[in-house]
Length: 116
Length: 123
Image 1 (tube, rainbow over the protein chains, first blue to last red):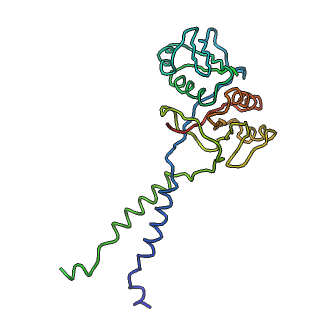
Image 2 (cartoon, helix red, strand yellow):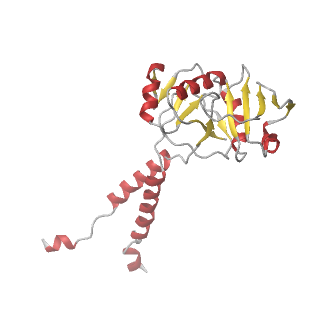
Image 3 (cartoon, each protein chain N blue to C red):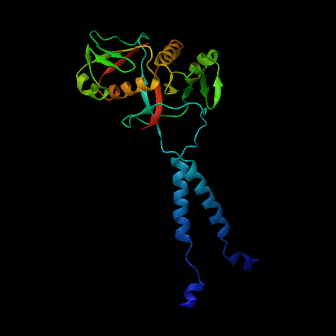
């Protein structure tokens, strides 16, 4: 009995199992490929600002307070504003909306409301 | 020389490293959740924060899916009640009309969802 206990444990099966588990988790793991943005539809009781900026979002056009611009220019154009209202025209897809909400989310202190 | 080779490579450092890797992937990983195959997620720029789990997928025809199973529109208020004030996440197909998405968001808000967030994939 004492002799048996002194024999070293066979490690190969252990390593086999651990390698299999490691391979499984390496292949199934995803490192947060999904991101998120806030969406605030207008008219849900959020405080309405006195003079919000007005952003008109069309399938191709993007007009801020009457001036056309590109989504990349939004953070600089809206810096210092307290609130913006986005009006979404018919024909706009979810991807297009997210392309505009992304830059808007980067403006510190900006309240975004989206009109259907 | 021969004697040294017969004793074999030391396996303990190898096992140490492998177990460390295993523990890392066990803790850092999440199993990929099933998503309806016909939903193509919208792309978000990398500046946005990572999304938490449990988003409600919205197909381009407006059907809703949760964990791969379709959710009836009547079940939405129960879903909101279940979240109990926590943020609700929507994962829209990129071709879904934004008006439909906003209508859904308004319906969820009216049902009591305090905060709605949009989920997309990293560019």
